[in-house]
Length: 255
Image (cartoon, rainbow, N blue to C red; front, top):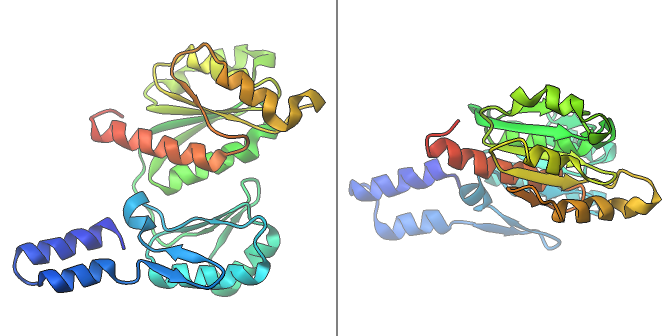
């Protein structure tokens, strides 16, 4: 169920065209589907603006198709599968031949609607090796209706690169800054901009990077104001939080 559907039901109740009991039944109708191996939440779109997102890594291949088929049947919006392999993409194509595969982000996208892009989110990376995680953030932000500008490969090894492009951040309601190694870029950006910064540590780096732990701890210890941190390689989470911040700013008259 979507907000538009809920609003229509409530409006019909207000006009006396629909009884309270019937309206309650429609709202409560099949909020979940239990497939035995997965319980799908069909009111996720109503609450979050996206149907339930499918995290594919670790899922048996024979569970992917019934999950996608059920989401297509019960929801109307775009459907996103994250951490998806080529094999997952091939399986989704059997159900929805127009599905898109974004290899860098490892996203399979079933696009059934286009949204107006509002506000401004900047997604920046320290290096090119961080781009797959940044693409996770960029795609989910665009999919949820936000205008995204990208600023890739501007890490602290050549800090003049981000300083020379400082104008990109003008008018942004939030910045997503993705970096591995020592994870210093979010602190630099945080000291430059007036908007919130979502820092995303990546697992990019040599041995003492400890799979992203060094970047994570560096970002958590940032002395720049307005920097918040998500988990290692969590581009999806950063992109969705950026969506919430940007939309709130737009509703409040910003962007």
